Length: 163
Image 1 (cartoon, one colour):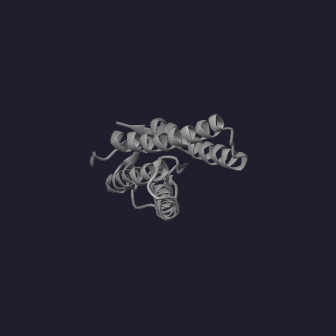
Image 2 (spheres, rainbow, N blue to C red; image 1 turned 90 degrees about the horizontal axis):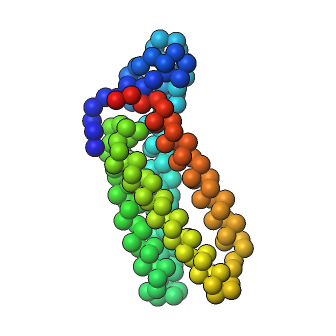
Image 3 (cartoon, rainbow, N blue to C red; image 1 turned 180 degrees about the horizontal axis):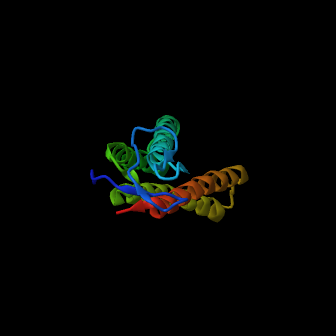
């Protein structure tokens, strides 16, 4: 994790400025007073999303283990808690998560692991001839929304960050 300060390019005047990491709102360019996205806040909201994911995965793991015992879903859900925890810790420990390559990789890796497992679940349901339409629609809507947000955040971090 890098602790060096990173400049941000203003979206209007394209001048570099040092964002105030304590600001909760938009980062204001000192040159032209334009509002720029607060990348730290957005990366922290990814961590918050992953915390919710951690809580629901933990609850699912516990309930599923109580009802079905130790099976593939229980094992994956338990193992999936590890990358969630690691990603959350790295995001919160990083002073500049929008410029931290490890944080970016962990965010996408965690999302990809979960996406891959859900796709395997859907493929298993198709092969067994027991497709659950509500599960599939919920999967598509939720994962598409998360993907769009992560992709937007990735583009914003690349667009505004200067090394």
